[in-house]
Image (cartoon, rainbow, N blue to C red; front, side, top):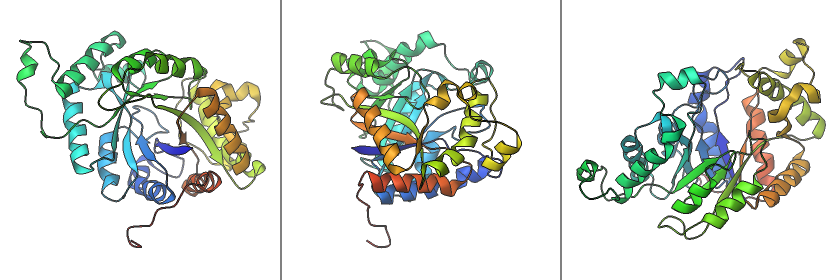
Length: 336
């Protein structure tokens, strides 16, 4: 099974957003070495626990210090953007890192209503029009006489990276199939079972220049440690943050000791739907759960998001998964 990574650059009580951004290269270099297929960056705004607001800048940052791993947006929240700028930015990235860039596109704004207003985010019902405009710029599909047909898109001679439509409830599945894009289901935060959406996508799929056959990525939230007990202890801060987020409170990720001092207990009533999606355990337990989820979703690839207070815990979790799934390590740039 192909394994990939979704990075949101977690902010913790002892790790600021600026430090999280500066250390993004640590995970990128490790993922590249361990043999992960791709590394995507999320676009979220106004969240205390997440520093990833600008995927295109992060891709440019780590692209020069990685060798083979694909880099992408998971994704560009299109209502926040002008389609022409998205095409220009991601063609530029494709020119800088040929064959290594993906363009994930989401229908939502990725934030709360007030922040969306400040972003001048378009309303949800405008998404199909924004998507048609983006494809019109890329594929030259504007109707005859349309003024935008005259616009020169730079860089020229570079195709837009492969488009992956993001979904969390199935609403974009049919659109993804009809336009011949890949489909990535947000199983890391959506309580909706992905099978119906992924099957809808496969039935609706029509081949395109980018994808000759349907391709499904399932995103999951997982934390792996040397033992089940240790994994459960390390997961407490994540579950605590998710429980608050579901009540509209965005806070930095605390340490296990800070959560214990706060008196919070991870009971089923406290965890909530998002916390129940978290896969926790030793390497064998996490692998079994990931494989089961992938089979149920008929996914071709699994993209793992891991949050933790300690960055070394997060890196070790990805190392354990790579070893358990038998990923083939790649030689470092210095070794080659």
